[in-house]
Amino acid sequence: MTAKLDFILNAENPPIERLLALMTQLRDKDGGCPWDIEQSFASIAPYTIEEAYEVADAIEREDLKDLRDELGDLMFQVVFHSQMAREAGAFEFNDVILGITEKMIRRHPHVFGDASARDGEAQTLAWETQKAQERADKGLTASLLDDVPLGLPALKRAHKLQKRAAHIGFDWPSFEPVFDKVEEEIGELKEAIASGDHDHMAEEMGDLLFVMANLSRKLKIQSEDALRMANAKFERRFRHIEARLRDQGRAIETASLEDMEALWVEAKVLEKAAAQ
Image (cartoon, rainbow, N blue to C red):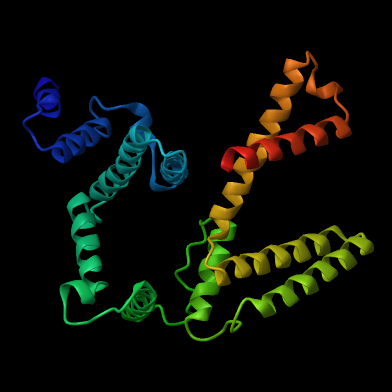
């Protein structure tokens, strides 16, 4: 153990080699960590998703120190999965690095080859074309939607499904017709509510959310990001209500809806004034 620990702690060794050695030791059945040894790809996957969200959170808060730490946590997840794959004889960390390097070269022929891209939109189109070719090379030809990950957040997956379909022309020509669809879906949701059929309500609510995601995409807005911003706004204003009631010596549970609405409006006014 001493020799392994010395290698991990030795600042003269490449940082990534030290991290890989640490991960190997954690998974070592002779002297490793029981929790780490018991893990599998499936059990670690939720942590990987959580760490990606924590990276996004640090970016949204513009906290670069925290971003550094969260990127480290996310990197650890990559190393963890790679170590388990190495133990299974499937691949190892260097294969992951080589794979993404080759993929990025392949998907940027305007940088590393003879192709050209006049702007970001043209490059996005070329990117999707290259991805389609890669799917065909892998034999994923049954559907354009085959490799849109099921584990994505639902709004983000809706965005990707719609974008994939739009790539071959299955899309509204502009955002205006989407508004008509929004109105149609709201009407159908109202009918479902009137029927009292809960399953039907859930179906129509899903349709409405799906078309709203489509509207976001047409407006070049990531619906997941937009909803996260709305969540942050709600949290900010609700905390203002709580703070003002505390200042008044009142528990929020005793406040009326009218009192809370007034403080909500106050929070909006203060935000607008601060932005000017």
